Amino acid sequence: MSGNSIGVIFRVTTWGESHGKALGVVVDGCPPNIALTESDIQKDLKRRKPGQLKSASPRREKDLVEILSGTFEGRTTGTPISLIIKNRDVDSSAYEELRDIFRPGHGDVTYYRKYGIRDHRGGGRASARETVARVAAGTIAKKVLSCEDIEAIAYTKELGGITAERISLEDIHRNNLQCPDPKAAQAMEKKLEEARKNGNSLGGIVEILINGCPVGLGEPVFDKIDADLAKALMSIGTIKGVEIGAGFGVARMTGFECNDPITPEGFSTNHAGGILAGITNGDEIVIRVACKPIPSIEKTQKTSDVDGNPVELSIKGRHDVSAIPRIIPVCEAMVSMVLADHLLRQRANQVGQGGL
Image (cartoon, rainbow, N blue to C red; front, side, top):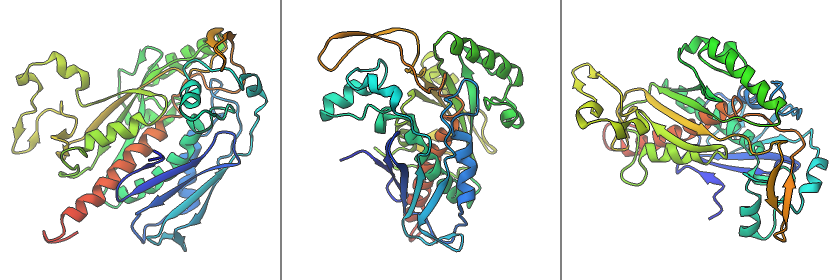
């Protein structure tokens, strides 16, 4: 298995490399007659593209998407949807000195040991550039979910140790970091600038809220929806941890504290994060993901070359100081893909129960 695809009914396959000619994605299983144009996809791609912050990579990609198949007169046809995003601002010169050197924190050494060959230009398939294809596919998944009034929204919860204490969803798009706490956002931007000047990088936490999800999504036992959500999010290179609902906090609770009381009106608390026994319970789904610091930094680090010789390395080139906020639409895309897939799987389960 190649590991380049995700989903059972709503199936997504990405392709392409950071410094190749283009990146793209094929989405199979999308229902017909859903309104979809390139401008719909472009809105989410704009949120992910580089060069929008002083602390972001200065790589200037327009990230223009082209729909190659699967739509007719602005609507999906039910056939595979193929999308392409061409690389326009490729500069591989900064990577030549890294041809035989493994960058700390990157997948260079593991790709080389696994395949015996690697694309040293920006990391190839392991590059964050690959996520542009995920965001494009995620727009299609969001379109499927919108038919059922299901919405996923993500935002910066923490960056460089600074936490958003106030959650105002109206403020998310009023600052560059897509943070729901304007005061925290200002402190985060200062922290990012300090790290940039010091040749370093920062990690953080993204929180994802899913509203409108019906009861019943998720397939026992190995395809629990929380398991699939965690897998989808962990497939993003920067993410090293996922928690749902109270997450690791449940380890410090008693059963009485952790259980969400069931009332005639619904659940009075949401420690479960909207999922019980791997099946959605109709409550808001709450997910947090831990994003590691960008490993490409100017600070001198110790590493080795392909022959095992010790090397001291300071990485130059065009790199973000943090994966946040550009990772936010990627997180939304991945959870939307999983939800769209499970929504369509649930419709299949309902055959013979009075409808689809």
